[in-house]
Image (tube, rainbow, N blue to C red):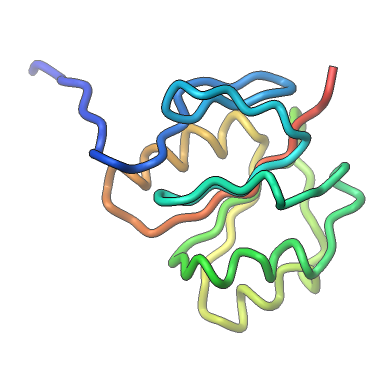
Length: 126
């Protein structure tokens, strides 16, 4: 079986990542946090650390109308308190938490499948 790399036209794909950055469609972003959807990238989603996450950070995902929200928690997996993401659950939006590398890979797969996904990424600055 032969595989071919395909990239959905006009959609944001994560083309690289590290401890303190992510590259989207070849453009490097070095903010400490980032909110990425297939059609938008927001560096205004400011989260200084995992412990700084609040309800407003999850509420910022709602206007993007995802069917699924991902949270990349940095280099290690950490679970936020369920009350923080209750607005997503109450809106019928699925929520998955993983380390940032796994969140980047999962986001790309879901975008390639045509899913409406949003990912909040936290980085560990060097």
